[in-house]
Length: 102
Ligand code: HEC
Image 1 (cartoon, rainbow, N blue to C red):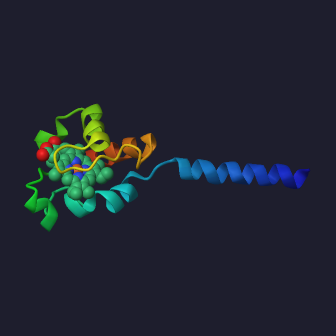
Image 2: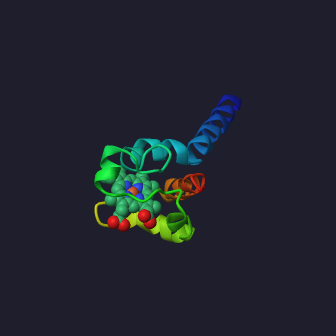
Image 3: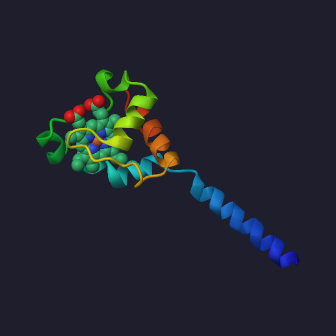
């Protein structure tokens, strides 16, 4: 019995560690190929698509909800991530994009 309790506590701890989405890691894996690691959009893909710098005033003046909607639903050549990323990951991505603010 004691072993079972200990095992379940360990499992819970492991799951909560995973639940806290790592915005920086998700961004690097899913977004940096177009938007560049620093959000500047200076990758060859980003330049070809004329991406705005995610840290620029034009992008940063948008609300969290607006940035989340673009990420979830996509826009023009921007792929939609709804269904591919969890709500937690989408929120963590918005928080990560705020770190690009100049
Ligand atoms: C295949 C290339 C590509 C990938 C990968 C990509 N994007 Fe984009 N993104 C775009 C393009 C193209 C636009 C510009 C759409 C438009 O307004 O014409 C854009 C626009 C945006 C905008 C709006 C910026 C603005 O100019 O207002 C946000 C926010 C954004 N992307 C976030 C993300 C996030 C977060 C990820 C990763 C989950 C991501 N993007 C992955 C191509 C990409």
